[in-house]
Length: 255
Image (cartoon, rainbow, N blue to C red):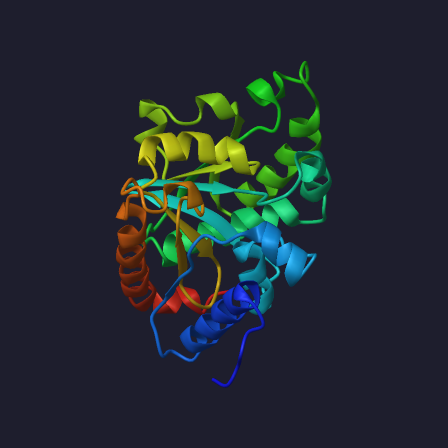
């Protein structure tokens, strides 16, 4: 691979591309990407760069991927990823966006997590899931029609439920995956529960990609305070997904 990067940021982007291509050619069973400085990549390399999830989706030429977080038996996902909160509703309104995300997530749960009949719980957009229209009508107008379409496709999904009530003992015993609308709805409970030992997975890629569920943490360099648990768990999840994909090879061939 004959390439000489002009700077660290270009080296970072090329490394992701290099690793992806080698996984695609089956030289490796999966790739782990580490946290990066998005602001520097945007400034020096690509002003349209959003994040590694979106970059890998583009590399893999996929219309839909899922941002998934896993810690032990807890699986959490988000409909939208790294976007401005003001653009959440605009993104959700795109034709079939929500339905395609739910469909893709359901398939990933079957293939990568070996869950035969996934049970998904989805949150609302507004506090208290709009409280029957008192705190917004987005649930009725945007979410519910797409959820009904998924149910008609025999996908077991329930909601929308108030995001602040999603993660409780009763629900943890009755659902396989908790689908939130936007990034921080999902990440606040997940990071609290996992204590930065969880793993970020990009669902619906041809390759297996995981990443530690923490930031760059430059402030911890040299202080012996950083934990390697999330990084180690990335390896474990890759091996688990690889095994499940081989086991569910027939499902993989179903669109």
